Image (tube, rainbow, N blue to C red; front, top):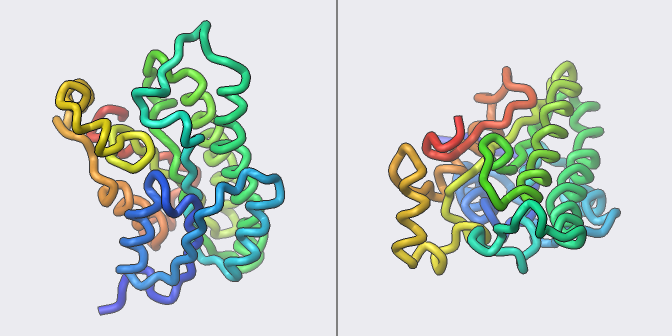
Length: 232
């Protein structure tokens, strides 16, 4: 039985970070020809170059993690009067600019073909306030707002642009195994989640898969939380 992405070429950015690894694994299992890009894509022309290297793209998974030095999530907390311009600029450089640029680069051929899927991997943190995550949430909120507007703009061209917004999902950047090995830390997160547990990377990847297939044909500019009920 053919996979749900058989014959499709998929570009995954930050393929070795955040939700990238489970997305690459699942999409390949579903028959996709996955281009797993691991560059940081912070240079202004790097996203365009990544799209050109990939060739024809049927699906773009715009997955971006923040600066490595700001990980994991327990190290990201900073007060409303204590954050620095440099820290916010780093989030813009690693999260916002490459996200906007790679989507801009991928859209023209999709619009011309009247076919294509763009799946953003953003965050649910702009949906529910977390004290101490102001600048991170602002950067992720910029991603979400851009995606919502672009999704509506390109919907008439039969191009679907949507996103999943993980929160409290195990990954190698924010919710690392090392951090969660501390029982007190893990239990403090679990206590906030209606599902009573943290999510697994493959659960986020399954939603990314749905957004990359015909299941999303009537969706435009949606940001769907993956958070076990923490953000609704």
